[in-house]
Image 1 (cartoon, rainbow, N blue to C red):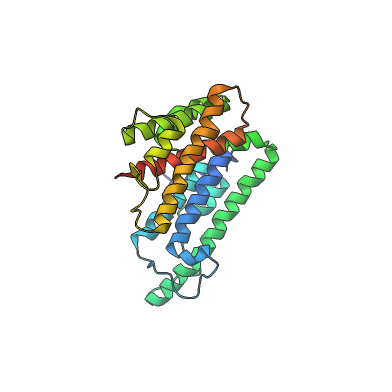
Image 2 (cartoon, rainbow, N blue to C red):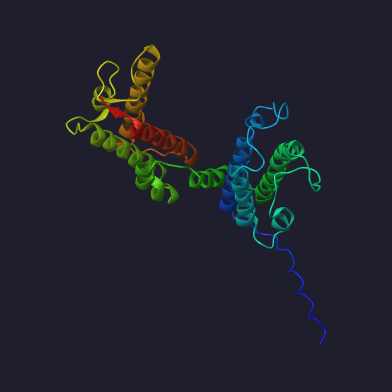
Length: 274
């Protein structure tokens, strides 16, 4: 009986992206670029290839990065996509390989593969950006997709994510700012205060309840005072107006406000009691 011929591979499948999938794919590939650049930080400054990168070719960090690239391309484009078929099992390497190649030459081929890999990932991002342009996505769609990719503090996300997704932008900002105020009260244990007086007391430059640094010099004290004003501004400019009147925040402005409130919540998480 003649041997059975292997089945031909399925035809390539061109993925039809939704707007959210495009934005999420771009962000995921940008994270992979950052990981490749971390193998040789000079890649991010334009000073690469002056000397060999500090990371060795056999380091586990290199394998982890290669596996992450493979997963990202698979997740973004699909198993039968032309992109995954071309770049699956990608190695950070440039040029050929020979038996008994000297270690310094192996390290050099790895070093040359870093910018090659970045260029490959940038090409995939460009392909997604073209798909985005073909869809003619408006600003609101792009901003809403960007919101999905934000790494919000859990307290802020729980308070506003559903409202933002349901297009209640002003309410999302209001709830996020209320969540931040409540977080300050809990961490400082000053439930007797509210609003701007709460922030001025808790984050006082001279005698804070919660400090963002050691307050050991002028720079530390300036940062403490600046953060106090940011928290105070979150109450006066974001919470209070939306609590007392009907505002119509755009998705872009709401996104930026919520990102600011999330940043403040993350700094608050790290603050220490004095």
